[in-house]
Amino acid sequence: GCGKAEPATDLAAIKDKGKIVIGITDYAPMDYKDENGNWTGFDAEFAQLFAKELGVECEFYVIADWGKKFMELDTKQIDAVWNGMTITDEAKLNSSVSNPYVINAQVVVMKAENIANYATTDSMAGLTIAVENGSAGQDAAAAIAGANVVPLQDQGAALLEVKAGTADACVIDITMANAMT
Image (tube, rainbow, N blue to C red; front, side, top):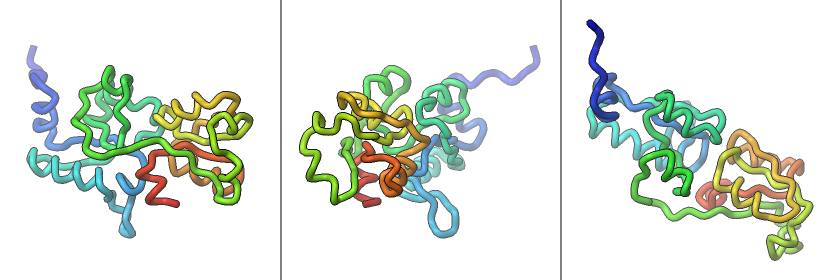
């Protein structure tokens, strides 16, 4: 047939279309919008420099359901996930993963006046815990026996639930917890 040949590699495909599409969520300090509405943050700026090095444009695509990030990759909606993603067995199974470049961990965030009542995860049975759907935080919260785990669109939404009092706690990345609390 007459059509355009498929590029041999993902890199060739990216160079061919002249841009790399980066899957992100709104997650300060890694990916968030500045006062002018432009994406910035550690990972956003890292991705922009990477794209420049490749000689292509950098386009950001907000992953609406973090639990479907690998489907977004498989369907080629995005070329990469670049969002402070925790390296898990699932990530290694479903994607090529870079070497780690940030130390991250899952932490519990709750209102300061309540934290002294919960010294162990066992003491958190019965609490409502907000998490980002499909995240390492969701996996960590699911391991808390008796907790009511509520999956939400992103980590920011999980923090807002704690602030509003509609969740007792949230489990999010320590990088975001340090930036936002």
